[in-house]
Figure (cartoon, rainbow, N blue to C red):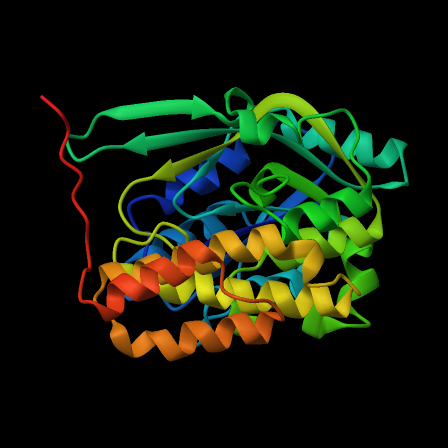
Amino acid sequence: MNPKASIIILTYNQESTIARAIESVLRQRCRYPFEILLADDCSPDGTRGVAARYAEEYPDIVRLMPEHPNRGLVDNYFDALQECRGEYIGDCAGDDEWLDDTRLERQIEILDGDQTLSVVFTDVEELTIDKDGKRHSRLNSSREDCRRWMRDRISGEEITIGVLDNRRTLPFVLSSALYRKSALAKTLDVHPELVRIPEMGVEDVPVIAALGRGGDAKYIPVAGYRYYIDGESVSNNLSNEKEYSFYRRVLLGTSGIASGYGISASRLKGHYDMKLSHIAAQARHAGRKDLIPEIEATAKLLGTTLPLRAKLHLLLLRLGIYNITVRKKR
């Protein structure tokens, strides 16, 4: 019997945390059959060995993707997606974990009961571990910029525009969601270049945008996912150069998706202004004057102009002023 849902666990070099991620999905109390696909991207540490032990111990639930050369996050995700047998798809990062052991069953039943929905998502707990090892936790529902998305129902059009025009937060965290595979396929099968974009470096933005094209979204008020911020990750960079590169790639990818969906650059100007200013700031802090022409060219590729704040960062960079320290009054 095919599983009702498939949960992808992406992992790379996460020997110390992958078991936690797998166990968190195995704890689900769900009356529907589900499978876990472990997608290890050629980890140099012992991650694959841990994953193999779980696949051996739970052969009816856990599948380990075949060993392969390193592909990068995007291709690793979509290669795993192609192997999913479930009607619904969820995921978990190898250094995070699922919360609420009833979330999967609840999400399945909501999607079963309403064919106009493409996705059901939950609240997220963000757990930061500081340099002293202290843990600081907060829910997305406590954040003003996230709360606007936490409504009973959100139209698909609003989801697509919202993820492409995001200034600070996405409409939802993909790992808190369960989505209808067929809703993603509506775009992925016809226009894969709008969904599977390796050069963008992330899978969530294009997937969420495509899901918005496939139906509406629903929020359920439970904390279903814990996101760990502890050191460096794909979206939590510790160097200015990596931060610059990451946001520039996402900017260009977002522009390509918007163009494919017929969304004008003027509609996304607020987003573009914020992110162009951000990458200009990263170039300045890194002292990378050589990146100035690339930033100017990026604005043109986006079909917009550099905002005043970005221009100021580039002016300071040209002047050799890389960081400004503001002294507080005593």
